[in-house]
Image 1 (cartoon, rainbow, N blue to C red):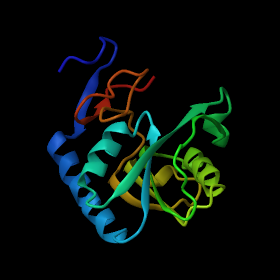
Image 2: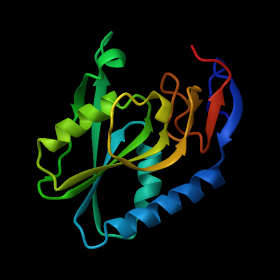
Image 3: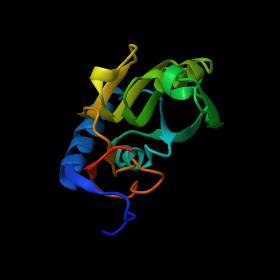
Length: 181
């Protein structure tokens, strides 16, 4: 698959397609059991979560509603404070509903905490987090991550929604880049 430009070099494949698919099925089964009989709305954080969101919602055996929310970084601020701007808000009314937020990767948790605060103003019954990748060593705050695919370290990763300058999201696996910029 030749989806990378010449400036991106892959060191190794960290999680292959089969490993990802198997883990997503496991998570879908757990979510199905945990939310049986409840009104569940699944909210994906665009763009990174789109592949995980799509695969995960197809293996959740419940009637669900799906929406997306988008955030943009504020230059010279976001990485230090977690403050972001909403570029696309949800369209579905979540008041009194159970919300499952789907992320691609959670590292510090700052942006995710902001997202949760924003969604809490809409008075859902509960907010739970699912992320494909979690870096527990970098978490700076407690956030309700109940479901995660895999734990990672500080490696620079690409594929299955993760990008480098918007390239590589469509790789069907997750790879470690040779070097971080």
